[in-house]
Image 1 (cartoon, rainbow, N blue to C red):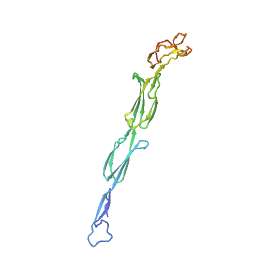
Image 2: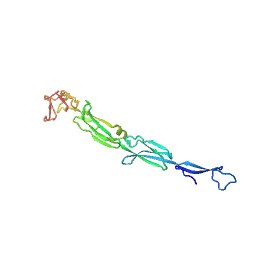
Image 3: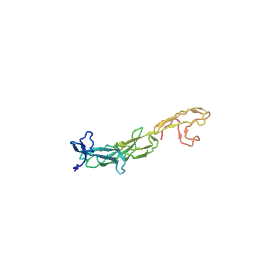
Image 4: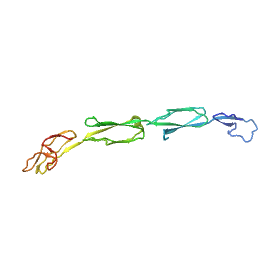
Length: 239
């Protein structure tokens, strides 16, 4: 009988011209050689997200023979850490199927709020732990006299951002205001408007209107004089 050999497949090699087995014994010598061919086995490694088994990377598929050693480095995947950085072993007499799980890395979202005119801090920095795939939608705080260049900070965390973290700067620029002058019945002249940013000091343009038979006495925010009053050429601050 033929002796079994672990990890090998036994075949005969016929000493014929075409290598095929004979069907009729020839009138002469015939040699037949027994051969052991190594059996190939497959090592398959899956790369998945821990807890969900979501595939994260193309499977590793390698061909090996009995008693071959294998050592496979787990791929780097942005936003994840492999629970096994290297996976290895020795091939037996069966195909091997393995799974490497990856955990999400924890990064940090930082939103810094600053005044654009002074670069000083406008509010406490917002911080939040993030991982790949997280979505965030953070409204920017409001401040009197200023407008944020980003009213909402939003997005979806990429793998690279989870690894490195996200730093966002929201800048508050001062609003600009304009004082316009109404002649309120004037029959001649004009007065140019004056503009300035929040908390800046401006001087009201001297009155240039005229009205026959009347003397100018100052400015008021209401046509009937019941609002806030300002003197001609007064200096004031936008607030």
